[in-house]
Image (tube, rainbow, N blue to C red):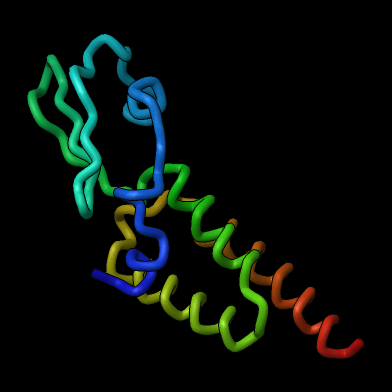
Length: 122
């Protein structure tokens, strides 16, 4: 388990509905029997396919949780460590991330970096 995964704890902290999962999978909601949050993945029991596993990283909440962690950094060193953890996770699990996730998070990081630098100057 990566440091980023430990930090975010998606199985314990993420909350979503069957409708959210259906929308992400682009299927009608009635095809989902149940959704279970497992340690490293979401298990979706579907009427049409049986079981399907979804990485937490594919969920919008993952991107938002990483962005929230970036925004909560109170020191540049903390921000740098978190960013390195993210990059390590991204490289290892690149296929599980959305196409624009890295760019979105890079923008959040840059904004936080600038804010923290301003605080140091004042």
